Structures are given as structure tokens and as C-alpha cells.
Image (cartoon, rainbow, N blue to C red; front, side):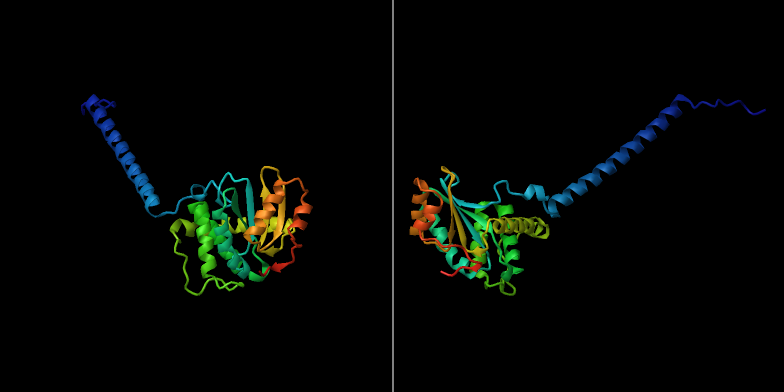
Length: 252
């Protein structure tokens, strides 16, 4: 008769089995940790940042000049408008020379200049999203210098020098065009259908003037003085000799 064998493993056998299970579990955990580390390294080295991380908290709207200025001059502009292109450099220089006014941008791409006008506006928006207020206005300046205007867009092969992977990621999203469309709709609802147009606002009194652009610096100073006075909104417009706004581009 064969010797009787116990069905229960010996203590040493149980210890060896537990050790093997523990080693297997440790091996699986190490593999998972290495896989997770590889994913993190790949994302940090090659993937574009998330849209939320890239969004600049300061805008839009994008502003240039004194952030606490009493007056805000909103510039309704089309990046394919030839008259905006001529007017923008002198307007920005004038803003830089003043102590109590800031410039605020408002997209108003005209139908006659599409799709180039909205495409350039989207590029400027992404420059602002990835670089902030001054990056936005730097992009506007570059675009006005290089566009052929009138809806022709940039010359073939022309490339924006600030086109980083983050900016390209923004362009590939729907955010910039949604902003451009929203601002264009706001302008249209406000009766602004021509570029360049200006709205001068006195933040202290709450009064504002809608001006037919381009408006020279002396006339803007006069409009600021009128807004600080006691006259109602209609009176300053008449005193400054400002006419109603027609559709389309506005020549100098």
C-alpha cells in the first residue's frame, strides 16, 4: 500500500507559492509604471498643450496701452481692409503718445474680403491666445505689412514668423474663428458695417461716441474733451463733424 500523503501543502511550499505570487504582482506593477512613464514623457516632448492651458486669461478683447486708462478706443477693423492697413500704424503710434487712452481691437471682416479676412483674423487671435496682448498687436502689425489687401491675403509662400506648434494647434481648433464670427455679429448688431470704424468710450462717465474712421489724433482729442463735458451723446458727434457710417471700406 502506497504511503499516505497529506492534501495540505507544507509550510515551506506555501511560502514558496506566496513568494511567486508576490514576485508576479511586483513584475506587473513595474511594467505598468514604465508604460505610464513612457506616455507622460511622450506627451511632454511631442504633444501640443491642451486648449485650456493655452488660452490667455487677458483676452479677447485684446488691448494696447494703459490698462487703467479712462478712455477706451475700440477699433473695428478688417485685416484685409486697405484703409485700415494705412490707418493702423498712425493710430497705434498716437495711442502710444497718450497717457489716458487704450486701444481695443474688434474684428469686423467684410464679406467682400472673405475668406482671407477671417483667416488672418484667426491667426492674430491665436497669436494673442498663445502670447498675450502685445503678441496679438505684433501679429496685426505684421499682417498689415505683408497682406496684399482687398481679400487677396498673404503672398504665396509667406509664413508668419511666430508660427509655433502651440499657435498651429490653436489654428487647427475652432476657437479663433468662433471669436471672429462672434465679434463680427456684435458689430453688425450695433450697426457697424464699415471699416475702419471707432468707438470712443469714457469709462468714467459711461458715455461713448461712434466715429467714422479714419479719425486723426486732433479730432480724437476733441472727442475726448466733448465726452468729458456735459453735452449729451448726440451733441459731441455733431460738434466733431462726424457723419453717419456707410457700408464698406472708408477711404481717408
